[in-house]
Amino acid sequence: MRPDLPKIHEIWVYLSGSPLLALILTLTAYQIGVMIYERTRLNPLANPVLIAVTLIAATITALDMPYATYFEGAQFVHFLLGTATVSLAVPIYKGLASLRGRLVPLMAALAGGGVTSIVTAVVIARLLGADETVVGGMYAKSLTAPIAMGVAERIGASPTLTAVFTVTTGILGAALGRFVLDAVRCREWWQRGYAIGVASHGIGTSRAFSVNAEAGAYAGLAMGLHGVIGAVAIPWVLALLR
Amino acid sequence: MIDGLVRILLFQGVGEVIAHFVFPLVPGPVIGLVLLLAFLVWRGGVSDGVELVSSAFMRYLGVLFVPAAVGVVIYWPHLQRQALAIAVALIVSVIATIAVSALLAKWLDRKAPDAP
Image (tube, rainbow over all chains, first blue to last red; front, side, top):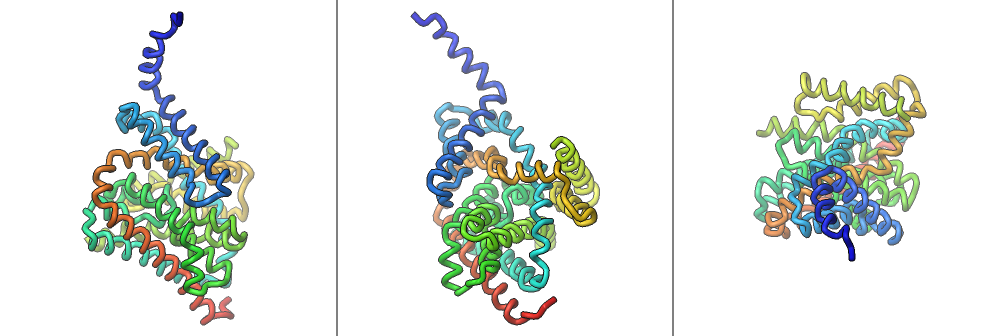
């Protein structure tokens, strides 16, 4: 006999109403993601965020838990995005020394890459019949995710779609970057890293670090500068165009 | 660690206030970031507390955008219908962005090898 059996349902009802369940789910799924990522020797396709989102989406769908209920608990993690954005100042500060003597090529590469990222994505998505909700999520996709989501809120785009496109862009850049850079015969580590950082922010940066330290440092610098400059430029330019 | 967190939260708070009243188009945390960056340049270094908090955030940055990204479940039917457009746009865009950035950096570096 299991006299405690009927109570399991009550425990479940109690837990699903408390933020704890969403928190446990979020952190556990991410931990599993990190373990798989490390197992695959940091393969960009085994991205921990992608794995965590897939696991959580499958779990809450199976449990019939509305997204709003999940987010109510997970918002404690979400809230820290702003604080994490502010602390990006530290890696940018450390990267500033790398700007010296290369200011012109680095800023031009950032401006050219940033504009290319938005124009190609928006034009192609529109041409292929994507609606405005989807197109809106494309604008900030090359910025680092915490900043991209802040920008999405300011420009009236969906932070969720922006986050999904941002993570996907990061994974694609990390996976394809090598081939693109070889195709355009870019051989200097600092240029390779920087281009990856401009296009695919944090995910590209961790990839660059795993290949070469100089490439990683420049990728991190590109991610930081693109985040800050993009956050200021994108809403203003869009406001002017609208 | 608490002193670092306090400092970062203060910069975030000031950034949010400035964003709210002065620059409504720029996300508050980004203004906080710029202010903290200016502070670090002015101080000429990073205090241990700020360093500790920042490196913890950088290490676990990914988990912070999981809750919002899970919202993809709401958009799922919507995204499935437009999957091809999204996939082509994202793939071509990232390839073009990397190529343009790399070529500009390469080309301008060669043009101005003695730039200060």
